[in-house]
Image (cartoon, rainbow, N blue to C red; front, side):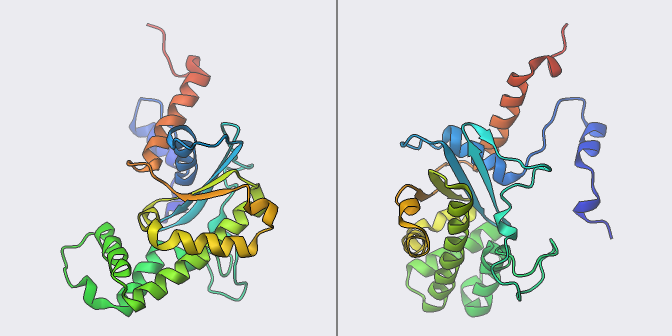
Length: 238
């Protein structure tokens, strides 16, 4: 069976379209969106975008530039092991952060703990997440326990980002940003407990407030930046 690892996206798009195109990791695109459009008030040298959706990842922007690494895989915080004896991840590592706090995991646990809140079969996946967050706001104990554990693991990821990149700001985005009122106080408390005070005092941790998917904003920003950086590569003289 073919997997996404077997697909050469560059080649596929080149064969299909006669226009310039760019492929970028979603967390990197989200990071650029927050840098350019997030309207963050404090001066920034380094921004970390912590993507918390069906996958877990991060993008780092420093002085307007994305941190890529050799093959574009820098800052893959979702594949940092938090339990070396944990289950094996598809990346080959064991106990990856993504296995504990992706929204897929949250949804599976919520359906097991409280299946009655998902009785409406018309729900879309995104609606399921809204159902979970609403149950937490209403004080359902089983769902609150799941959200408490989610906050704990998200905090571990934030601690890793602080220790690795010393950012001015960590912006938590994707689906989980809709539950900031539930998660953020506990995230900050755990991060403060587990971080050197001098580092914690200088970093802001917040949920994304962009009204449109940051990945879409970021994709537009990345494409524009690359075209304007070397317009002769993309503009054909008439």
